[in-house]
Image (cartoon, rainbow, N blue to C red):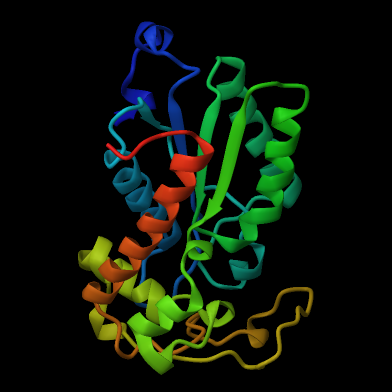
Amino acid sequence: MKSYVDLTWQEVGALDRSGCVVVLPVGSIEQHGPHLPLSTDTLTVEHIAKEISDTHGDSEWILAPSLVYTYAKPSEVYPGTLSTNGETLIKTARDVLRSFLNQGFRKILVINGHMENTDFFIEGISLASEGLKGIKVILCNWWEFVPDDEVRGIFGPQWNGWVDEHAALVETSLMLHIAPHLVRMDKLKGDQRRSRYEFRILPWEIENYPLSGVFSAVEGASGEKGERLIKVVLAQLRSVIEIQFDVKNG
C-alpha cells in the first residue's frame, strides 16, 4: 500500500488511476471518556484501512490522508472535542472526493469510524459523483460489518448494543488491541446514559450525558476481544470489496 502524500506528482501521474483503490479513513477528534484518546475513532479506521489494503495484492492500493475534522457537536459539551458544522463536512467530503475523481481515480473506499459523519458523507459523496460515469465510491461504517450475534459472542451479555457503545466495552477493547499505550488503565470505569431512551435535547448540555463520557460498561474489555472483533470486520469488508470493486484477495 502506498501513502498518497508520500508520492510525488510524477508518481501519481504514472499510476493506473482507473484501477487503483483509494482508501480514505474518516474519523473524529472527540471525547472518549477519561481512559481513551480523542483519536479513538481515527485510530480504529486507520488500522482497518491498513489491514484491508495489505490483504489484497492484485490492485494498487493508495492510502489517502485521514479526515479527522468532522461533525461531533454532541460531544462539544466535553473539553477536547473539535467539530465542524454539518454543511462544512458535506462540502469537505464533496471537494475531497471530487478532487480524487477529477484526477481519474474511479474506485474509492471510505472507511468511517464516527457515526455522526454518516449522513453528511452520503450527501458529500452524492454531490461529488454527480454527472460522472464509471465510478464507484463505497462508504463503510466499520460497525455495520459486525452482526449482533458475533458481537455478543465476543463480548457476552455486557454488550448493550451499538447505541450505548461509546468509549465503552467495544471501543476500549479495540484500543487495547490497536494502541494499548494510549489507554489509561487507571481510569478504566464504566458508566451509563442518564436516560434509556434515544432522543435529543438541544441545545446540547452536559447534564444530558454521563459525566464521564462513557456510555456503558467497560468491564471485561481486552485486547484479545478487540482483535477478534477486527477480524470479523475485515472478513466481512473483504467480501464487499471483492464483489463491488472486482478485487481478488491477494
